[in-house]
Image (cartoon, rainbow, N blue to C red; front, side, top):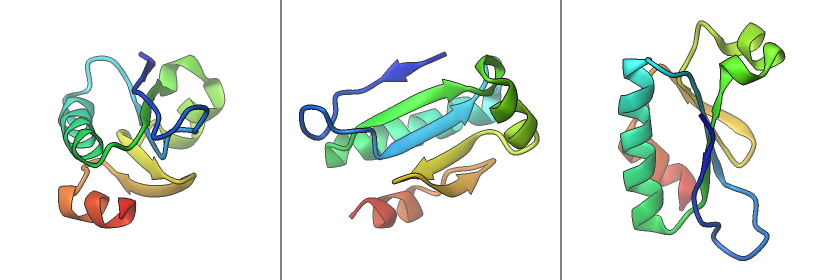
Length: 89
């Protein structure tokens, strides 16, 4: 469950990372918010499944979906659209 969106600039790392897993309804809701906000702001994002990495699964399985902005944990369980927009400005 990895999907990459076009970066802000060539070679740029995604500013937003969404950790989730298949079959997670909260992940689906979070993905919709992340896609909408990053699309409107032209910001790169990436999704990664905790099921693909034992360490991520151990650390975050009870908190998914988890969003990171610029490498720092931003939200878990739900993504607040206004808060995400503010963090990306």
